[in-house]
Amino acid sequence: MKKFLISAFDPFGGEKINSSLEILNLLPEKTGEKTIKKVVLPTMFFKSFDVLKEEIEKENPDVVICLGQAGGRKEINLERIAVNIMDAEIPDNQNYKADGVFIKEEGPAAYFTNLPVKKIKDEVQNVIPIKISNHAGTFVCNYILYSLLDYIYNSNKKIMGGFVHLPYLKKQAEDKKNITGFSEEELLKGVVAIINSI
Image (cartoon, rainbow, N blue to C red; front, top):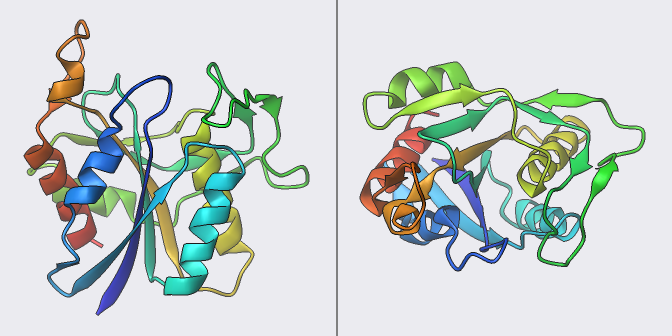
C-alpha cells in the first residue's frame, strides 16, 4: 500500500476560489492500492513549507504531490523543474512581495522532480489534456516545489515529490475572456489518474 500526501493552496490574489483546493477537498481517501492524506497550505512564502514539512514528518508518505492553480493554462501541467528564486508580481497571503531573492542562499540553481513525469503524461493524456511544463513560475508554487525537492534530496527519506498545476474551474473562468475552464469532475478524474499512474 503506497501512501500519498497531496497538498493544495488556499485562494490568493483576491480570488475566492482556488481550483487546487476545490479538487483536494473532493479527493477520496483511497484509490486502488494507494492511500491519500491531504493538507492545505497557506499561499505564503516560508510558512507554506513549514506546514508541508510538518505533515511529511508526521505521515511519512511515499509520494508527495503539491497541487496549485495556474489559471491561464489550458491543461493540467506536470512541473519538471523548480528554480531557486522568489520573484512575485503580487504579494502572497502574508502581504510579502518577493523581489528576486533566493529561496536558499547556498542552494543549487534548480532541482528536477523525481516523479516520472513522462510516464504520468503518457498514461493520463487519454483522461484529460495534460503536458509537461519546464517552468513552475517564481511565485509560491515554485517555492514549495523547490523547498520540497531540497528537503527530499538532502534527507535520507525515499520520497518522490512533485508539483501539478491545475487550470481554472469552469465557474472561475465564466467571467474571464478566452480562458479555459474544466469541471470539478474532469479535474478530479485527472488528479486521480495521476495518482494511479505512480
